[in-house]
Image (cartoon, rainbow, N blue to C red; front, side, top):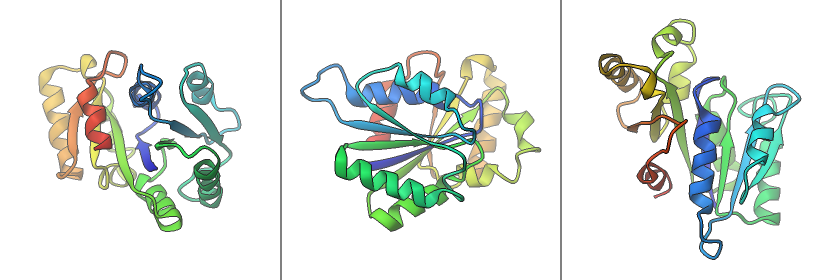
Length: 198
């Protein structure tokens, strides 16, 4: 089983990307499909994204509510993943974190407790990046610095010059990650998903 943490600020397009990723993992051929479980972490009590995800098919969706998994409910997360591993034995568990979570904390919590391989994928909103730099300046390093893959989303909403500036800025926080440009409302190249799970 592989654990994937999907990070990014609210509105970055995590759910749109996640739906495509899950469909890629499940695939069109039921005989060769990977088994995938999605865990949603919502700060509130009702999972809006969870309801969207459940309308899809071929994967299970679990919700964790009333707190952030990187701090107040980390024990609940470990218990949930252990139960998922025991009861469902999936190939992949994808955790869509809240927009204020630190993906590295989530990864370490799960890895230390369960000893399963994991990776961090983070989405960046190209359209709002410059506006987020100052108000979210304290959170950005914790979002990006440990990601192995960074998806710069909404490239259809910015010009080439802005995209180049976002690229350079993101590299300032993490110069070792693989960076891909996407528009999550359109088809995302399957080579990107293959890179994440290799």
